[in-house]
Structure formats: C-alpha cells, structure tokens
Image 1 (spheres, rainbow, N blue to C red):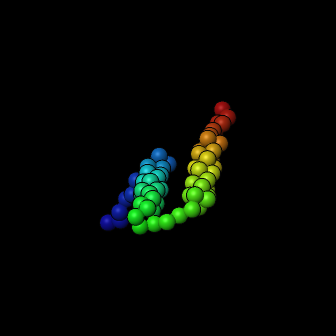
Image 2: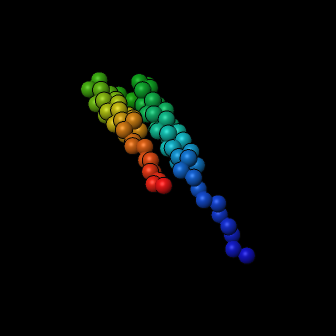
Image 3: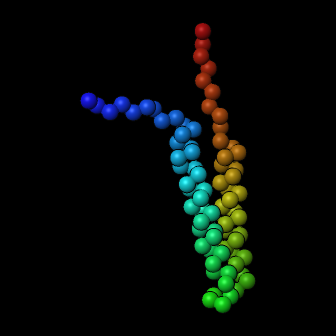
Length: 78
C-alpha cells in the first residue's frame, strides 16, 4: 500500500526551517564569543568593529526582508 502524506503547510515549513536556522545563528554567536578570551586570543579593536558591523548590517537586512515581505491575497470573482 502506498504511503499517504499530508500536505505540508507554509506555517509548518516556517517552523521546521526558521527556528533551527535561528538557533544555528545564535550558536555561531556563542562560539564567536569564545574568541573574546584574552588568555587565548589577541585582536585589534578595528577587527572587532569590522566583525560586528558586518553582523549588524546583515541582521538589519534580514529583518527588513521580513518586514517588506508582501502578503499574497487571492481575489475570487463571483
């Protein structure tokens, strides 16, 4: 007998993808924070500024994408 699969909803896709991806970003930031240990690493202030400027710019870009995402409506004529 063939397996029947229920259609995956857009919301389910979002939950399945967005939360793990967001958690991966947070994990990456946590790992990056390990580099702040001056007993093991040395850096220049300019390097830190460059890293965090890039991170902040990307966060702003991604947030804007969510805020500008169009809502799709379907007009049904009677």
